[in-house]
Image (cartoon, rainbow, N blue to C red):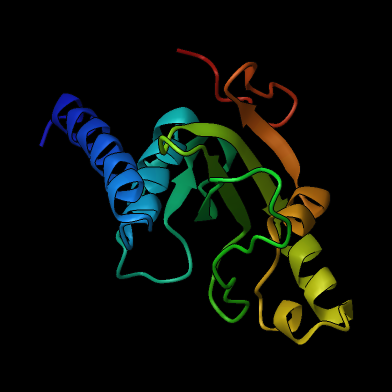
Length: 165
């Protein structure tokens, strides 16, 4: 499948997911992860990995094939607190986690990255059982990590040096 075809399909998936939520009052299961995976790979210029490997979804060729686990969260209401991301599996191989935040139209607006050591240190030191299991809030992930892409600014050059093109 060509890149154009994939981009077109993801665009249609965004529209379908947004319309489904508006009509049915609940999100379409599983679609935000697929959209976020595509967006992270495209926006951060990553290389997708075989999903059967486990632990990570992509590598960054410009950073010695850094293994990246991609997580997503669609934020429908900014005023709601305590929104969580999917569980981070500490026992699997990965070097960092990227969190793609999307708006109600399933469009990315921010991407954060947190290193493995920083995440594992927080999980080990936390008194929260959820955090120890790798279930973090979006707010906590943003505190631990750093903004690497935003809709307004694009890539953060001090972190992502793969902007040559």
